[in-house]
Figure 1 (cartoon, rainbow over the protein chains, first blue to last red):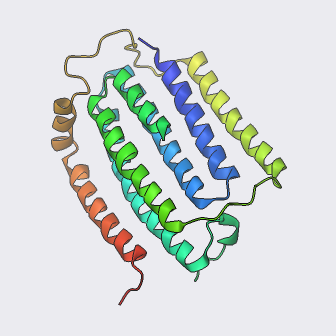
Figure 2: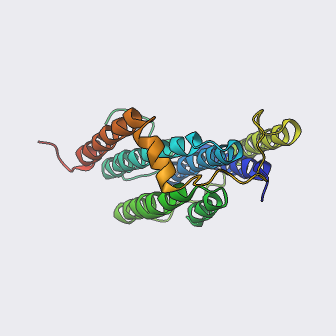
Figure 3: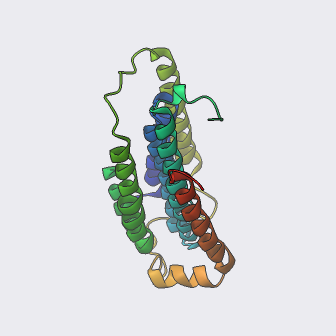
Length: 100
Length: 136
């Protein structure tokens, strides 16, 4: 069996990749995907620790995280869609105002 | 997107059967299709290359790799928690199955589970309201 260390390391690397995506890329769709990647990294850590401690609680938390991620994706993509209709751009640098 | 499928494989490795199935259905299925639909709807033109902010890019990469290295080092030096059952030990029978997880969901976590349904309803209504062309 693979030790828990390796799963946590993979989770940290995935989270770092997601963080770089959020910080570096300017396309809001890519930024959004990077956020999903970071959520997935957290899920992997939860499941790895749950397996390590033989406790089901981590998997229950992952279930709730997935629900929140799905809700967030739906609302966030709707906002991106509306932003693009209004401004004709997905560049985060040009979307600096909170008002229309 | 392949990463989401491979994460499902990782969950299978870790005896999380229901979570692995949910990962494929929810992430690789629903969320990615949603992303593809939005990308298709946006009809984007070719993006100008992002070459000008090289310094900022380096700083971000350095900070993120520092974070990853710190976590990996902490895990290797200090171990992964006081309750050290160990990966070698087989989990109790039925660990991670749908039955075990749903038993927890409907007893100990019944209230958060019900709140989840409200959250999803709010998300559906909110997404439709935001994405509609014109509110009357």
